[in-house]
Amino acid sequence: MTIMKFIPKITLLLLLLFVHSSQAKGKRRKCPEGAWSEGKIMNTIMSNYTKMLPEAEDSVQVNIEIHVQDMGSLNEISSDFEIDILFTQLWHDSALSFAHLPACKRNITMETRLLPKIWSPNTCMINSKRTTVHASPSENVMVILYENGTVWINHRLSVKSPCNLDLRQFPFDTQTCILIFESYSHNSEEVELHWMEEAVTLMKPIQLPDFDMVHYSTKKETLLYPNGYWDQLQVTFTFKRRYGFYIIQAYVPTYLTIIVSWVSFCMEPKALPARTTVGISSLLALTFQFGNILKNLPRVSYVKAMDVWMLGCISFVFGTMVELAFVCYISRCQNSVRNAERRRERMRNSQVWANGSCRTRSNGYANGGSIISHYHPTSNGNGNNNRQDTPLVTGRGSLHRNGPPSPLNLQMTTFDSEIPLTFDQLPVSMESDRPLIDEMRPGSPPPPSGCLARFHPEAVDKFSIVAFPLAFTMFNLVYWWHYLSQTFDQNYQ
Image 1 (cartoon, rainbow, N blue to C red):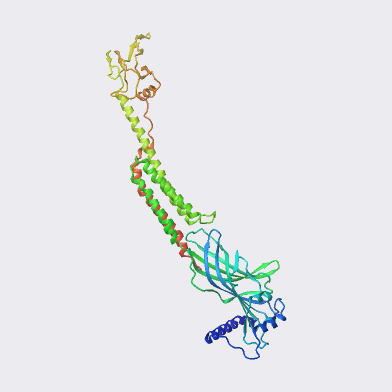
Image 2: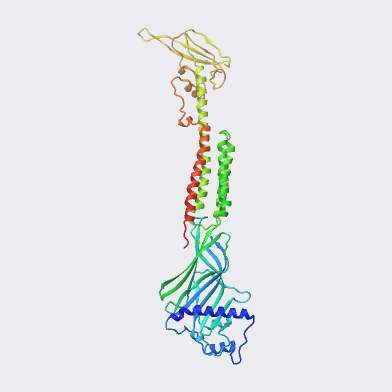
């Protein structure tokens, strides 16, 4: 067991010495006379070899390492990433030892056609969606056999592996992608998997369009399956998103849209079409931009940081539309109150009172009509006379709401009396005259103005042009502090 731990280091050292000596001389070493050729050695080994689990006192120790050659883009829609690796496996099979044979070299580079004829731990990436061996033009597989029976296999693979996406912090998120290695055919009693001392090596700096690889880590676990315990090796890659693209394409345009929506506060309340156009255009721009961002993301049910930002900005633009509706309603209420006051003032100036002498008042605006009020004194038995007036209407006289200097285009005759002529005694020739008579009554209350009439539209706009920027500033402070603080406090170790 102790010797097996040193086999990978000794093997790698011998391999480096062989490569160095070959590069120093610049040519292959010529084998001495009597030494067997590689073909003869392999034929001798394979003639007596049986593809079975190697005999050992303990389980077969398989050492694994990977060299990361390149990485593709991380796809949020399919929740996976692509990676090109050099996958190396190292184990000892005593049945393949040729130390007892007169070999020219201490290691033999085998042809890939012999690989299916020897035993292998059948290590696979159990969580990969797709794994292919590069063929350029032939399969990129290297098999080296050492004289003590150590087998070194290297595959150049293109792997598509899943990622554990959590988009709550998008676009300030950090994502992790995992590769899981496991022997598909042998449990831990037969095969044990181990990471080498340098399990993962980056052959070049990894740069993705949207992410930076900030950390990677390895670990080993033992899982219980129905047929025993199985060793499992995991390598986790941690990616941090580059949010500069979203600052330029999402956040800066929304800032400008929000500021444009505040321009309506500087317009006068009567400019209703212009203010409505500004608000609706800003709202549509934000909605279109929000949908353009979401179409490149998976349909998750939780709230993302981008959702909070876009919905907050849409709420502020919607608030400007509510403020516009409030200002228009106040303006309409004030106009109604002013019109009612003008009508009451005109009616008050045109009231007719009998002042004790019978006379006829002609209105220059009467169109041939007249009202004649007849007085019939009666006695009630106590010596008091009661007034009985009977208004008569002749001609085309009717009550009109408009017509200076008085809305009553009448020609009327009064009588000598100390009691004024009441409005109940006036004739109403048209149904439209009844509201006018009701407003002329001295005891009728003015139409209610409501508490909103006390507000002024200009004052509401002045308040909004200060309150909206202040509220948006507070929203920005809370938003950026909450999400950026979580980004800076992350520990990748």
